[in-house]
Image (cartoon, rainbow, N blue to C red; front, side, top):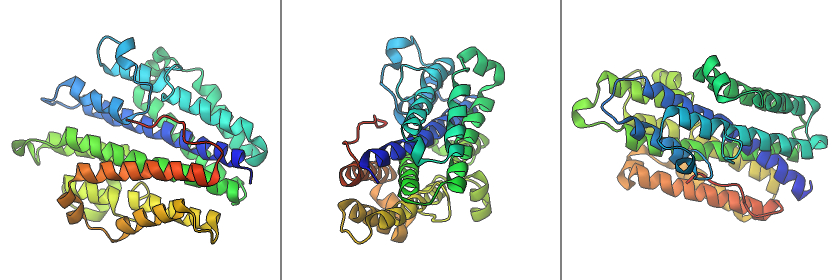
Length: 319
C-alpha cells in the first residue's frame, strides 16, 4: 500500500474517533452542569478545554467560559481545527482523497455525515437539544465504523483504519480519566454522597462504561475501581488494555516479521497493561501514570508515522 494512502486512512479514522470522543466529553460536562454542586461552573467546564483538541484561542473569542461558548467553540466552530465540525470535515476530506481504497458504503456514510453536519448552527443544536446532538455524533461514528468493518476488505487499508481508531481511543480514555479524576475527586465528607455518585456515573457514561461497571463490581462507584476498569480490564472496549491489544495485533499484521520500532513500543506498553495491577498504578500516582501513558501513546503515533507513513505527525494533540 502507498504510504500516502495509508496516511489518509489512518487520519480519517483518528478524526472520526476524535469527533466522537469530543461529543462524549461535552455530554458528560452537560450532565454534570445539571447537578447541584459547590464546584464553580467554570471549574466544571475548564477540563474540556484541557482534554479536547483545539487551537487554544477560546479566550480570545469569548469573554467568559460558559456552556454555550463551549459548545460553539468545541463543537461547531469551523475555525477551530479541533472542533467536531472540523474533525468531521477533515475525515471526509481524507476519505474523498482515497475513495478507491474504501467501500462505496463507507464513503456514503461519511459524506452524509458531513452534509448533515453543515446544516447545524448553535440555534439548531439548542432547539434540537444538546444531548440529542451529541448522540447523533456518536451514532454517526458508530455507523461509520460498522460500515467499514462490514463492507471493506480486511486488508492493509482496513488495518490502518483500525490502528488510527484505537490509538486515538486510548489517548482519549487516558485524558478524560486523568482530568476528570482531579476535578471530581471529592472532599472526604463528600465521599459516597449522591453528588459524588452521579459525578462518577457521568464519567463512566461518557465512555460507555456505566453498565459494565455495575455488572463487574456490583457496588457503589469508587475512583480506584473506575481507574481499574478503564486502564486494566481487557474486556472493556474503551480501556487502555483493550485498545493496545488491538493496536499490537494490528501492527503484527502490518509489520509481518520486520523488527519495527513501533511494534516494540506497542508491545512494551501492552505488557505493562497486561500484567499491571491497580495498586501499582496508584503507588506511582494515577496522574503520573496517565501522563506517562499519554506521552508514550503520542510517541507511538509519531513512530508509526515514521515507520509506515509519509510525513511526521502534524495533527494537533490535545494539551
